[in-house]
Image 1 (tube, rainbow, N blue to C red):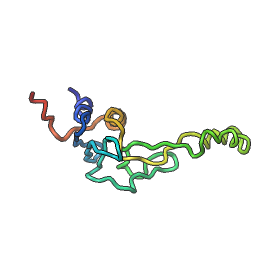
Image 2 (image 1 turned 30 degrees about the horizontal axis):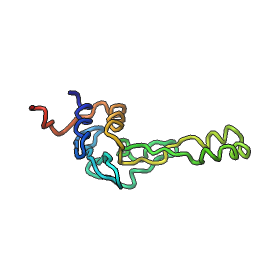
Image 3 (image 1 turned 135 degrees about the vertical axis):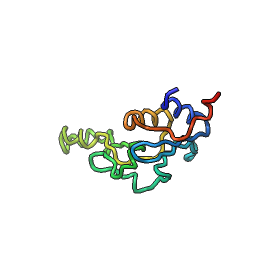
Image 4 (image 1 turned 60 degrees about the vertical axis):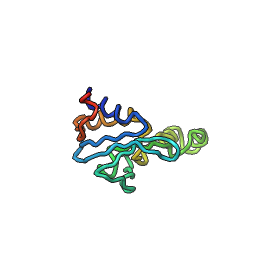
Length: 137
């Protein structure tokens, strides 16, 4: 079983956690309740800090710790306002105003699968720190 499948399997149940090392940081992936749903929380070096959520104007994280977190994308203007924006600003500017932009990074992932896809893409050298307890079976 490869490391990606191992991470996904450990986080697939109601409770689960994985400790790993990637990008020079120790990360903890833990299944938690957020409001009324289960999410996977990502702790970087044991912390989730509010200042790490900020993104630059071009959508990159201000802090390197946010590279492990989920990019939160939104539109500065609603698509329902596109018609009016086009009349006032022109098509090119209206397209820019209604395009999706990364405005923050969230420490929670909805599913283990989406988190694993992100980690595979950005951190292929990820190393699991805890041994798999089920591997001996």
